Image (tube, rainbow, N blue to C red; front, side, top):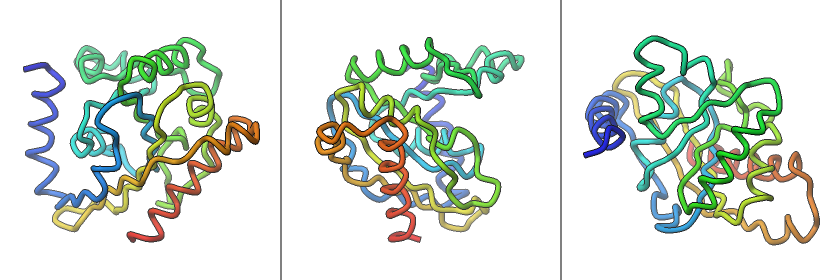
Length: 193
């Protein structure tokens, strides 16, 4: 058993009953091939919640400060996370993310780049659009519908993959592609709230 699968099973055993997590649309994540999984970001627990509800292992970009926290910094790389420097264009993180997608794995992103303080979705950063346009991967929107309150239901909704053919044909830029992804996440929130 890998560190990832062990931690995943422990975290699932704790979080699923506490937050009564309901998962909708797991079947929308393709069983094979690269998948860019884009979710809204409402709480620090979002990455583990996506990690335990997705049917495949998820690789996450994580703020580089986490990798220098004692103990946590040693564990995080074993949880399929890699560092990204926030607030600037981090070419190494972009290359790593593209490599994950090209290897047919799942890359999890929170396009807003940071948690929402209000619970409302913020504007997405161009990084999600960059990956969507550059990688030949399925783009799956994910809505985390909270709030996180003990013994209240938390929903995680995986939408159908977004058709990027027209986006590429119309030569949209990364920011416009991100806007499309964010609008699909918002539709899921509106539909399942």
